[in-house]
Length: 383
Image (cartoon, rainbow, N blue to C red; front, side):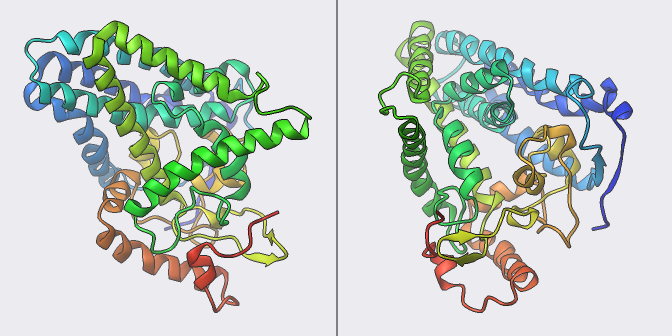
């Protein structure tokens, strides 16, 4: 991998054509409607396109090592912001439109209806939660509410509190449920993170309110908003599609959450911050997240794979996230579509990733000779 270069000026960034590839996600909307209206083999279009087609395009297109000017303003990034802002109403209309249409579609069998909403879950997880992740990091109230709406559609609203108050603060330490431990397979990681992230996010909000002298029952606790939005989505699903609609809504939410946690699993697998003693850890650096510069999947995922820079500079919008070379951050061998499929097969995952984790340790922490406590998450909790 050659070294990245900063060669996209703010004038270039502001051009519509530069932002256009990141709008590829909107092409998934007609695909899911084709699956619902045609049925048959078309019900597999969504996973085939997002998992396999983008992997093939990645192999052909290669890596994108161009870095944009990180000082670009929101005005320079207008077209990029429009992409993330427009997605929420489009997803809302698609999801709930399908919840009205599919339950009464006589041409679809029960299995086909389930397959359509499996594909919807791939979309709401791969794109919807990812866009919510981008929006929740912004200071604009409308963008943050859009993030809450997207997360409510998959019944995972607490992700915002967990991500902002826990994950970014404690990443690569035992206090972060989302950091996958070395040799921890996804099938062990998944139930653990589902349980721990819900508890840790609620406790983080409760602690924040306590510092203000307020109980967790104070209406400023965002969990009340989370529950209200999620309840609204559940009620709307029943109104539009009856009990079948509710079941299909729950199916897509489950698939979306699974997609999110697969990504969480691969982003920090086996990476740890050095414990400096007395519950102190080194600052987060690009080396504490896996980086991937694959072009097509970064278009689809709005540069989420430039995860090293996201944790290093979390306030940056996705167009100006920087990519890093081998000397600064560990590199994934493939983009997220292939890596998430590998994560579902622990024997393949360990064969691919464990040697890379061991190489990362030798590169960045040659002074650490005993990793047992890091592997088991038994180093002291950060203060």
